[in-house]
Amino acid sequence: MPAPRAVVIGGGIGGLTAAAALHHQGWTVTVLERAAALEPAGAGIALAANALRALDTFGAGDAVRALSGWQADGGLRLPSGRWLSRTSNEAAARRFGGPVVVAHRADLVAVLASRLPEGAVRTGSPAVLADPGGPGRPARVTTPGGELEADLVVAADGIHSATRALLFPGHPGPVYAGFTVWRVVVPRPAEPFPAHETWGRGMIWGTIPLHDGRVYAYAQANAPAGGRSPDGELNELRRRYGGWHHPVPAILAAADPAAVLRNDVHHATTPLPAHHRGRVVLLGDAAHPMTPNLGQGGCQAIEDGAVLGLLLAGAGDLGRALPAYTAQRLPRTTEVVRRSARIGRLVSLSAPPAVALRTAALGAANLFGPRVVLRSHDGIADWHPPVHPYASQTKARTREAL
Image 1 (tube, rainbow, N blue to C red):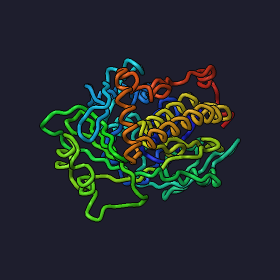
Image 2: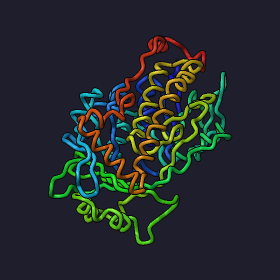
Image 3: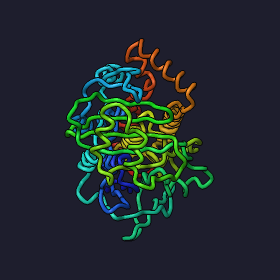
Image 4: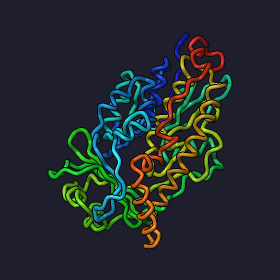
């Protein structure tokens, strides 16, 4: 009996995770990536313990843990440099059962792609869902090289997912969150510094060391949608953040103007009615775009892919597995989207009285130690992959339900 076949639309972190998880469970997988190469944005990504445990389900967790660069203290600061709260990766590991790994996205993509057989990823291959399929009928995907049939299609085509729009045409889709973000990776400054996130009036800056001697920096500021700096985004960052504490000025001085990324932030204010339809599942930003304020966008995409792989172990039973995928992922990701949006609104405060109250509250919370600072991730970073009573049984199933 031939292995069941999955087609993954999108070769980002979520799509590659789903492909690797399904391949680990015996599926034949084809990943269709629009770009000419797997060249992710030149930025970092924070992977909390929940994402690492998801990666463990198909053997990639330890390789990603080896990419960690942040091992020491860090915390929350004001633009003047004053510390509002302190924490550490050790405290996070104690509370959630594992550390936070901050890695370059390109390194994470390389680890995920290495879990796939040669030829599984087709770059320069845009794909469009032609038919979501159904009982007794495969799904069909159109590509420049012809049409592909599949037992399962995984739509990981991003925040502006065309697949989501086809499956749920009445859904309003993501909306602008009211702020934009910048990201850049630079060489580490000579003068040492602790990892930090700094909150100003409607603005934040974060700096985290990477394992290879570089630094990942990110910024967020309230701004109209679609805005761009007339003299370049690096100059915009220097105007906004050039007077903030060390190492912000040093990072801005070392940054390559061409390497600064700027993206408006969109998120889902209305959850989808389901994360599947027919033989198609949505994951990552295609299913639940969120603000970056909990650092869970990539983590939830990784969870999606791992859970899908577990539910479809062996041939799998799509008749039960895909509704189970929606039942597990929809409530959880909806809650993470909402919690991240609440943090985003708190960060976006700009009126002086509101900012003063926020500063006082954060300073008071620090008196109770790092456990209070980490509490915002309770119920998120402590997630463990599910174990289903029928998961092991599906290995013995045939493709009768496909």
